[in-house]
Length: 210
Image 1 (cartoon, rainbow, N blue to C red):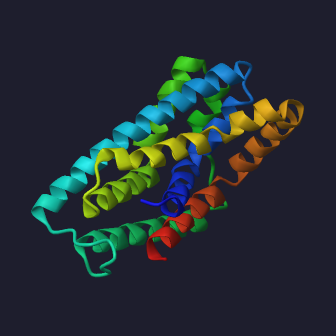
Image 2 (cartoon, one colour):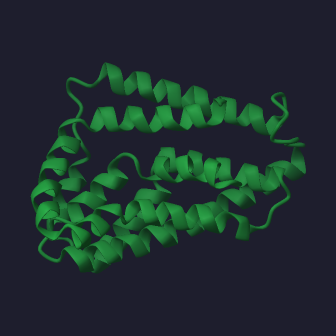
């Protein structure tokens, strides 16, 4: 997979409660330690998730010929089109429910999280988020279609961790400005969680269809 393909995938992995968690951790009293724990969790979760989905795609490939990634009618592409339909339905649901949409309640408990809890959150926001499962399945299918080994997924994993680390990087580079801006970003995301979810779905749909 080229960098042109994996960068949008990595961004999509972190759009939603994932990046909201990263922003919250940089506003906690133990910002650096909590953020590093979160990033370690994201790295582990993404590595495990991609490995599982690579295995699932390999099993599918042994039962059904997934075909070439350039073949619009291949089984692999049909699977992706089904995923597009599910994501489109999710976008509609978020739009319809935008007036009453609220971020997950567990996000509000992260302000007191330490490194170990942050690590667990990093793992779980990757492995339990439907959008991330879809992205990792797409990566697994792409690996199988191109007869690539797991090592080919390492740039995707690294980019996902890098995207997750952007709030921490901003805090370290622009300490005072970041301390002022991060809470505002956190509040905006809390009140516009429905929009964040729609953007995540839209990015992934465009990535598949273009």
